[in-house]
Amino acid sequence: MDSKFKHLSLDNEFLEKTIFSNSLDDTKKLGIKLGKNIQKEDIILLAGDLGAGKTELVRSIVEGSGSESFVRSPTFVLINNYEGPTKITHCDFYRMDENLDEEELGIEEYYEDSATLIEWPERVKNNLPEDCLIIKIFFTEIDNQREFKFYSTGNKSKALLEGIQ
Image 1 (tube, rainbow, N blue to C red):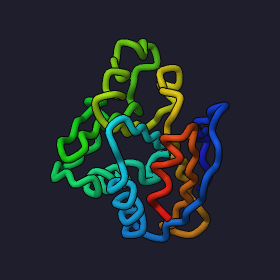
Image 2: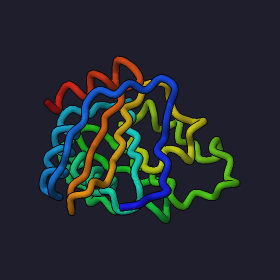
Image 3: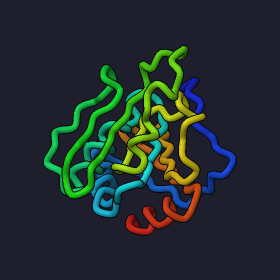
Image 4: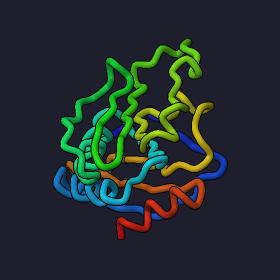
């Protein structure tokens, strides 16, 4: 699939692993593994073109965390919160006004109170914490297959990845 989408790239990111998902079920299993390991103050950035599976991955992360919340795409409200053993804040900045001052969003306040999952992080690049797990999702030539590349930017994000062997 030809795409003009440009993935987020941070100076301190380190490629830790690549996982291929051949189905929605594979993606769900991956998210559940992440969710079982997610903790307060974990930050996960989800980058990928439209339809790559970011929100589906978020749904399974929330499920894996033990939350019974229904996950809907926060595209129009930007931020949703899900209660559970680990509180999760889900941000989707796809429709964020390019002229909106990122500081007006106040997303930094969530970084200490919950695990934070951010879709379209390239739109808030200047307001990201130093240590986050970056998941870049790519379409492949095979129908329904996705390539997930996991990048750490510090010790906390690296530790989160250890649970998805």
